[in-house]
Image (cartoon, rainbow, N blue to C red; front, side):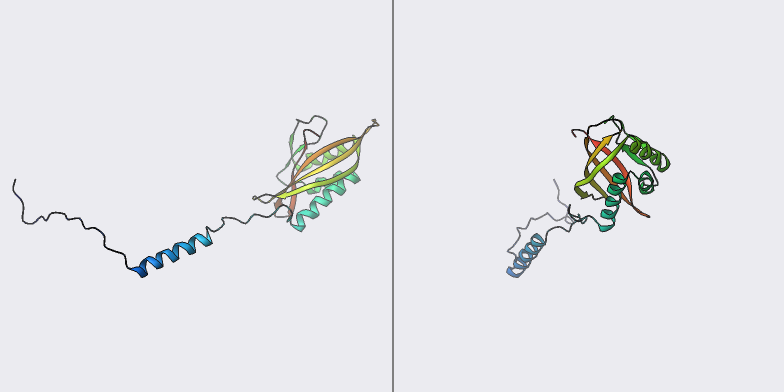
Length: 173
């Protein structure tokens, strides 16, 4: 085997000691990064920090239920429509336009009188929605008993303010 004079053999070098000030600077930088941590990707609003405008809409919804005001609820429906499931069949949910929702609420209030509509808890989601669980106490027409239901109310931020995008009775009362 002949060796070529223009090719040199590869020699491996073992790394020498790192100067102390370089080691100290690298250690200090890694400690600062670890202490600061990663930057949050998004600010999350806590449960009790429901925006005042959204809180106002939730109060208007509750007032409309107690007053049996289907017009007020119809005015709060999102322009893209709403999912409603408040009737006697708990698993029946309807996707309705705002005009259809107006008549849904009108028929709902003809079928009974609301005695109470109170929120138990509210939560802001990361996608500009507020989810609120309410207790709805009503007396059905022609029926002496009182019905108690838990209702999930969903409102979503829209260009015209907060609007209803869902109202469904929760199973289990």
